Amino acid sequence: MAVNEIKNQSSLRIKLDLGMVDGKTKVKSKTFSSVKPDASAQNVYEVAEALMTLQEYTTIEIAKIDNTTLA
Image 1 (tube, helix red, strand yellow):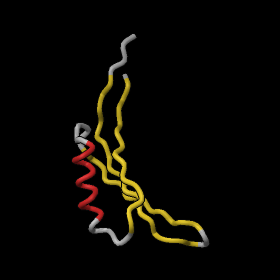
Image 2 (image 1 turned 90 degrees about the vertical axis):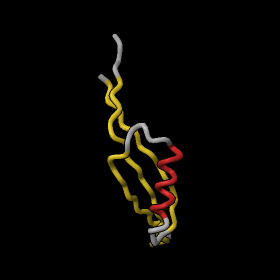
Image 3 (image 1 turned 30 degrees about the horizontal axis):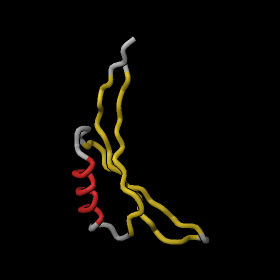
Image 4 (image 1 turned 180 degrees about the horizontal axis):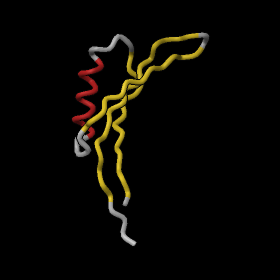
């Protein structure tokens, strides 16, 4: 049986370091949805870098999250 793949909208997640709270690093995630599924990793990273300049906290991680439906 053949499996069809349907590429859905991707999202961009940026994890931020809010500092230490009770001896543990507090992390906050910001997710931006409706990223084109065919957007290159380089283009998504460049957008994330631009968004990072608007943030008050240090960035820990940048992730492009792809979403594929299998039918």
